[in-house]
Image 1 (cartoon, rainbow over the protein chains, first blue to last red):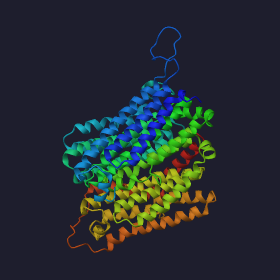
Image 2: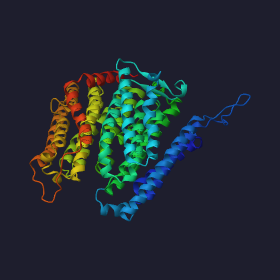
Image 3: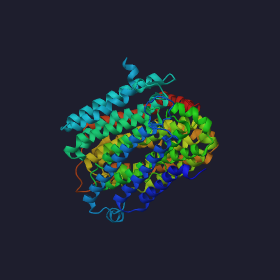
Length: 117
Length: 492
């Protein structure tokens, strides 16, 4: 196993763990959303990396014997990017409403006002 | 021929209705359109159920691209059984929502609410019909995103935090599922479930596939609220509008259980899931803890909605317990309980929604004396409660009977005992509500509750009658569950 050959996959794991850690450890609701975003983005890298083929080019039909990259994971991840944008905007919209209702975006302060959270 | 297009119509009908609803200004017309679409889509589900009743499956190629390249919708008896539940519940809950939502939401938000409801419904149907692993993720996010929006519409400000909590946990779950699907794609180069099932056989013993299995397990269990990943559920159910709670409680977690069955039995295969990965060793203890601890927690709740929410987590435990036996009988019990629990929780939450409309509260003490003022609503609640407990002549009895039989067959006598014990705990928490409602003395300043309007009573009683009828004539549900279990154990 060469480390550099799997560089993208290592990056995926590191990013995923950073994002996950931020989601769990942060008490600020906006920061949690940012962590969630990093977490989702790491998965994009996983998908994009798996489509790459050594010396492969863009999948456009050309004369001769050409190696193409696999475009399918890229297309799939476009869908996931859209989902990620939607999740982020919905999450931020909720944070705005929470700020209006509680006057704070900090988890511990909300918890003092409403113990259920 | 329209009958060939049924699988896609199932998804497209509510999907197209959603943007139209969002354009309406009048809440009445948005409601009327939603009711019409829900009934139409129920008709489609019934037709699909009839087609798959005699075994085999219906395959639909989207855009005419043959599988495994194109997206395939593949419907066998398990799919169509779940479709029947989901669309049946929508056909009942949407008419109910008319009055209930009018009372609980601001006017200008109501058309948007129906748009979100139809989108959520589309997502749930989509997860159920599709035979493509990535398509599952897309529909999962459609249903989840609209669910977050609907929960946030609750009157209480805690609805916002509940929705936020669910958004964080739900997104982590969905992303885990996405990673699992991606890892499977790396090893096999396909996303079609039937094709995956075939190709996974050759790469089964690689670490990548085992990791994919782990990610999928955690992701799906988050969505179906298996203990200890259930933390989002009680708050979400408690603070969402009544109609939303009724719809989610009877469909969303059930579809997640379906997803579990589809991935672990069809895609990975029962042998890999149970013999190699020992799925039963993870699911069974968690299910047992869920059943016992959540029934216990439900006993101490003073909010009826929250009590029923905790009871839901316990009931999901029963389903997972049945599945974890890894036998045909256990699987039958799990699938049966999936359907039956949808019916009983639907009836209970709808009856509760009617109580909320008239009393304005879900606290037990505020329901004092309501049994005499709202006899029909409370009557429905009592029958739904009996079904939840598992009294003979209700659907709850049927699924618990099969579950106990499967436990005894597998030699787990203590588990059979625990099922009976937790049923007794259900007696206690349902009795707490019944006692206050029938024998409690209403507070002097409490508003005088009158019987719920007919547009709410009818849907409630349709479900109550379904609870009773399918508890007496079990040929439909038991037949479908047995057939589905047989097919799952055999692969496709």
